[in-house]
Structures are given as structure tokens and as C-alpha cells.
Image (cartoon, rainbow, N blue to C red; front, side):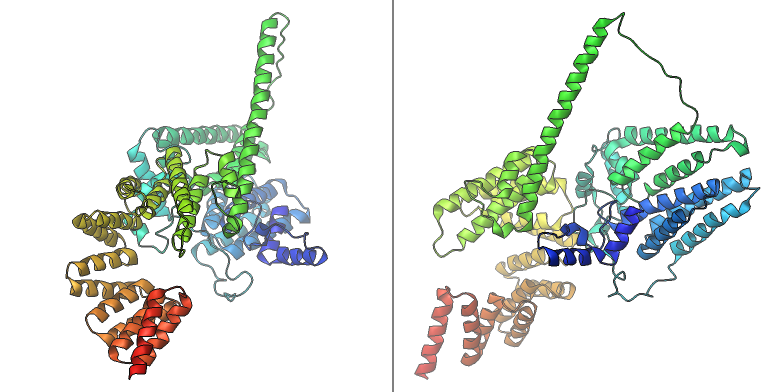
Length: 616
């Protein structure tokens, strides 16, 4: 009931109002930020996980009411409050879970005639079954609420589709049939085996660490041994439960045994449609344990003594102390990880507040020292050092010592991330970015970058971004044919990927194939009209072909998309200068100077035009 109440508070914004009221009393009396999100609940980090859990609870309560005939109003209020949440969220797997389990319950009840003396007890299960079937096939309440209402636009969890999840799980099984990729390694499978259909979705750049359902994850990460062991355990439990139920007379079917079994079946059904978080996994094993207990009475107790075998007492004493110290050591390690996460969160809240340096006093650097085995810390730290390097490099007078330090630190953290997790794509990718960005400073960085990006592509073959970055490094090494091949592979995966299309058009232009380059960019703009760089590059090609009106049109579109795009503003100045409209050209050059006050080139251009105007 507390879970349901907390969720209603979240959906209708009561937590935010409570937090504001507390803040008006004392600025320090504010609720945690996570409680202010509309989808906040006590079950998981998504509203969908909550509905799966509530579907199980609803099945348990309905069957419990049918058997026990409870008359207290509180349990009915709770049940209809749960139904209200299910109606608001309208998550189809939750309706399917309720439909399947209650249908099974009703079939069994009618077959065994369990409620022949009071059939009205089945009214509530039948009512809930009808509701779940109606909302599973279509939502009669859809579009009744405006999109800008409090509950009209709930946050939606983004996960791979059922088809993609099963496809990746099957590919993982084929790669390692017996043991799979290993528990917790679905992210590895997703990167390696994501299908082309996924790349055609708006979420193609995301890397998921879990599928949409638990069974697909078990299939890919534990292999034949894992999935068969899991299904064998479930099958044995269901078989023994069935025997236990059928071995008793109809009147003696326990009031508690069947609701527990139905709740377990609901959780099992949910695993085919949704993944497992901590609460759902705990509930699964809890109901399995309760179901096992419900099979029969307590086993007779047995006592053991060490009077005849004092040596065994010593052995158990040693085992006790070893286990105790093991627990204490585990708590110490977990405390370190918790402290590291606190520092990491402190950094993520406001990264610009903290200065990364050789001294290592920022929260992120402290977190990395405390929990050196956490790969993600090294990845984020390497990217932070890379950002610091970029900021220093663009200064009018960069500090060479700072540049050297940032290069060394970025490489160190990138290598450490790869050392800890060589099969993590983001680790290889980060090290590749480091080598890419330091190639003008560190000798041999280009070749190292090529090697690292090739490893990353081996782990994630269908990634247009990695293919494009590798192609750029091949251009630096003057291997243009290889670069073209990689650009084309990237565009086969995502024809609207601007970076690959633009880079390939520039390469074609350098080879004298200007018409092909123009055609490529025109096609890109049709597919990706919001790419500022695509409009700028197409305008530049038009300008070089003396098609000034077309060039102006493209530069103006780029400025509409990004008003402070200096290259487009400067290019507009050049076009108007060539057309003889010096006033218009000066207007755009001055805008560029406002954005780049240290640019000597723009200052010289303005002086040149002013001089020409004065001479006229």
C-alpha cells in the first residue's frame, strides 16, 4: 500500500509540492531530487517495472480474496488503487500477465469445482480478467486525457524490442552454446550482434545493457547449461506443486498455496516480456520459496552435538570466524565502492565546477583512486582529460606543460579502462578518441588510433560512428581507398549519418569529383535536413562552383538552425563580397568578429573591405 501511495504522489506531483513547502520553511529541508521525477516509485527506476510488480500483486490479492473471502475494506481499496495505476500507465505486458494467470486460475477452478458452494467468489477474478483483456487489445481511455495533463505524458522506458532482444540472445547462444557470454554481459552481446533493423530506429546510437525480457538475457548470457538449469528448476517446482495440489481433496486445497503458486506463475510469465530488476528477482525467489514451504508440514528437528567429536567444534569455530571476517571485509570493500560512487555522482552533477589536474583533487579523480577497478570511472576521466586538452589547445597561448600532462593522463586512463575491460566497446572507443585527438602532439598516435578503433569495430561491427572515425585516421595515413570503403560501409548502415556523408563528399571533392560530392550532400540534406554542417558544406561547394544564390540559401539555412555558426556567417560575407555587396559582407564579417574577437583573419578582412570602400 505504501508503494502504491508513493507512486500516486509521484504521478500527481505531490512530492514536488511537499518539497517546495519544506524548502519554504528551511532551504535545507528538501526532498531528494530523484523523488521529484514523475515516474519515481519504490520498485524500480521505471514506471513499467512498477506495473509488472503490481500485476503480480493484483493476481495474488484477487486469488487470495477468492479463497479466503476476506471482508475488510482496506484490501479492496488497495486492489482498486492498483488497478487505477495499471489503467493510468497502460503497459501491455502487465495486462497480459494478469490475463494469462487469471485465465489459468479460472480454468482450474471450474475444472476442480473449487468454488461450487459459493461461485460469487469468482466475480472479482472474472471482472479483473475482462478488464485486462480489454486493455490488452485496445485502450478505451486512450486520448481522453490531453497530452499536457499531469498524467497524459508519462515517461517511457527505452529498451530493445522483443524481436531484437530474442535475436541477440540467440546469437549469443550460437557464439558460446554451453556457457553463453557470462552473467551481466548482455551489453557485449548487444554491441556485437545488434541487427540492422535496430540501426534504422531513432535510438541507433544507444548501447543497452539489458534486453526487454529476462529469458532472452538468460539465453544469451548463460548458454544451454544456464537456460536448461533454470527451466529444469522451474519445471520441477511446478510439477511437485501440481502433484501436491492434486493429491489433496478439493476441500483441502490450501487457501495460501494456490495464491502463492499463481503469483509465482505471474512472475514467471513476466520474465518472458520484461527484464528483472532487484525487486522482481527477489519476489520470484521469495514466492518460489513460499510455494515450496506450502507443499507440506514442518520437518522434524534434528540436533547435533560435539561431545564425542570436539575436533568438529574447533573446525566450526574456525569457519565461523572466517565467515565473520569475510563479511566485515566485504562491508569494507562495499563501503569503498559506495564512497567512490558518492564522489562520482558529485562530479556528474556539475562537471564544469571541478578542475581536472595532475594533483587529482577533483571528485572524479578521487573516485578513480578509491575504486580503481571500476572501468566507467577511467572512461569518464579519460574523456575529461581530453576535454581539458581541447580547451587548453584553443587558447591563444596554450601552456605546453598542461598540454603534455593532459595527453599523458588521458592516455593513461584510456589504457587503464581497456586493461580492465578489453571487451567493453566504450573503453576501446574512448582510447581511440584519445589517440585521434592527440595525433598532432604525440608521434605514432594515428597508428595506435587505427589499431584501437579496429578492435572496437570488432566488438561492435555495426557502428557507423566507429567506422567513420577509423576512416578519418586512414585519410591521415593517406590510405584513401580504405577510407572510402569505411565511409560507404557506415552509410550502408545509416544513410543519413551526416559525419560519414560529409567526410566522403570532402574526399570526393579533393579528387575532383565535385558533382558527385554535391549530389551526395543534396541527398544527405533530404534525409537529414537539420544537419548544420551538411548545409554549410553544400553551400561551400556551391560557392566554389560560382552558384552564389544556392550557396546563400544553404548558408542561411545553416544560420537558422544555428545562429552563431561562424563558418556560415563568414562564408555569407565572402559570397556577398564576391557579388559586390560590401555593406552586406561587412555586416556578416562583423558578426563573426563578435563571436571570435581574437580572429586576426576576420579583422584583416574587415580592414580590407573598409579600405576598399574608402578608396571608392
